[in-house]
Length: 387
Figure 1: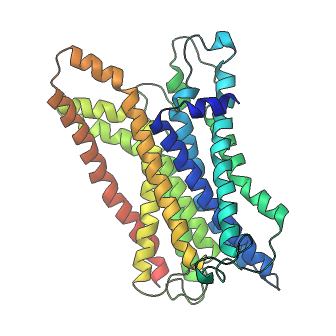
Figure 2 (figure 1 turned 90 degrees about the vertical axis):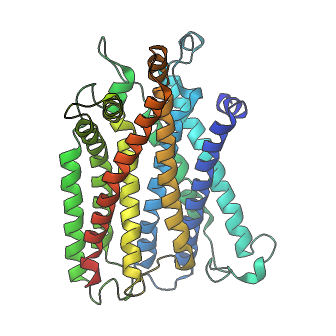
Figure 3 (figure 1 turned 45 degrees about the vertical axis):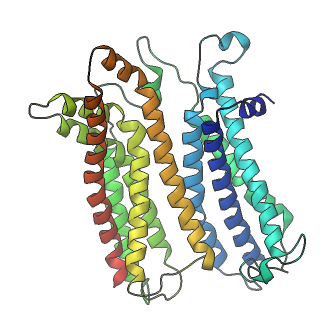
């Protein structure tokens, strides 16, 4: 009940972020229902439904990532003085964030079920002249228990991930709670860069091995891509997500090297301080963009396998939209976190133009570093699949 009251009284921008989670959850639920409907209509047991279910994991992971980012930036779940006295300590706030995430995701799953049943004609007859009947296996069986189980995946996973990410941690005297939550102390860079590079290299190697061993090749359109290719893409995405904070931190160090001025110094220190917050979502966006570039390159030489038919675009759009929205939400969190620093610099007489130039320089540096990295990973990923 408290979660619903806070939702009703939230700021419009906070409600917009929660609506994004609801929309993403609805899209994932729709894809899961499509997979279940097609599996229920197949007379023989094949591996195709399992492969389609595995393809649903990418939109599911992107949606959960967005839900966690929205829960982190929700002002209703941030610790504030006086809340512990009324029974809203860190543990209760974490539970509140998990419940709010579950409510948003459950609403999306319910909407997905209603839209799916409506398009199948199970409620009021076939709409839009039955154009979606074949894609949604209209007229076929739909196990209710299995459908509800699949629709519960997003709320349960999202709530669990939010609870784990926002769980209260014990801090040592003099240690900042937010820095302990980000997993590193001030002055020490993120330690995931070597592991991220190793995972990315391993993912590309797995893709190369699977692409050479696939009969007929992936780019020729001869069926679905092998499981090794999907595993390679997953490892590459995880590697870029782990390496993202380290790359951003390294950019900050390089930017303020060799007698920096005020703008370079401010931009470099800001990148180093915010590396953990924006590095991971930036690495995920880099991974998704590289996968889309690789798929587009493969489309130029043949038909790319479409595991959902016409709904494949929906899955790709969900992944791209969720990762981009997560990056924007993380950037907004960074802006709010640095509000006190900005006010202090303005109070000391720093020109507004210097602060704006610092923000622009940070954006340009990240764009210059991550754009060629995305292109290089995409080319290395698509190279073995073109054979």
